[in-house]
Length: 71
Image (cartoon, rainbow, N blue to C red; front, side):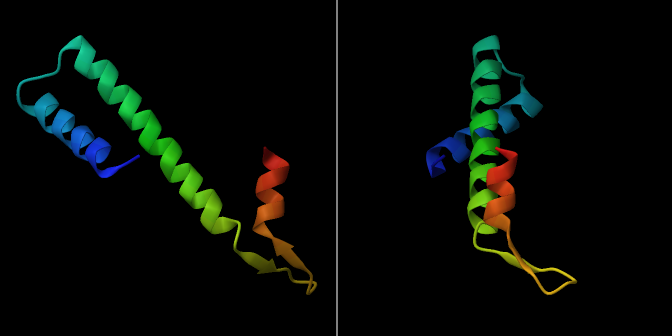
């Protein structure tokens, strides 16, 4: 996801509110939104992989391990 993709998402949003979108534009918007959400998820996973949690019993749990178990 780059700046041009985000700019296009915003353009399509504003157009949808003003004059509406064609079917092709609706498909493009859905595709770009899906890619954007996946990009956000990837960034969150990357950030969480650098986090460690100290449990009540004193043990340390790496969030990376929890993320990898859920995959």
